[in-house]
Image (tube, rainbow, N blue to C red; front, side, top):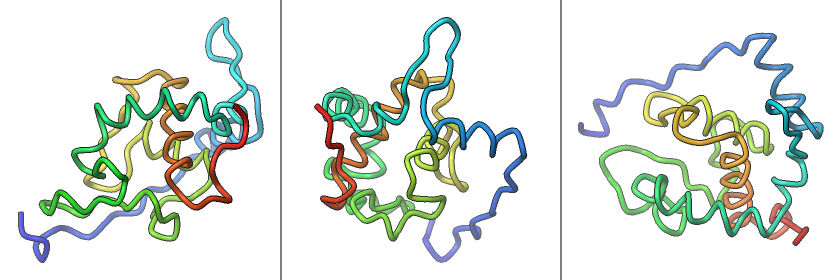
Amino acid sequence: MRRDTVPPIRMKRISLIRAITLLAAFVGPISFGADSVDVSALANSRAAARTGKATYLRLCQYCHGADGKALENIDFEATNLTDPTRYRYGTEPAAIFSSIKNGAGDDMLPFKDKLSDEQIWQLVSFILSIGPEERRPQQE
């Protein structure tokens, strides 16, 4: 599909339940079944970023490029993940998590059926690690 024929991006209305879920994910520990995961720690972990890199290379590099700059695939416009000013659906870890889990726009497919929440948080940590220095994970 040519770029000049791509349909405009449609904004999604966020439901109250989804907003509460995003807030809970951003604030700290939430429960996933019997286990409790501190999502703020996962999003700020270099170890999680290393694990997330393998998932990124397996599932994300086709669209976003191996380096996250989205320069390799010209069939559609993927987001440059190294530049948060280019993010369309939020720059906070919870917004990145939601974009991966639920999809974003017409081109970003949801990964909720392919990845666990923990794997998505590891992916968020990796995405943060390739961005600006001040956003990179600090904990080992």
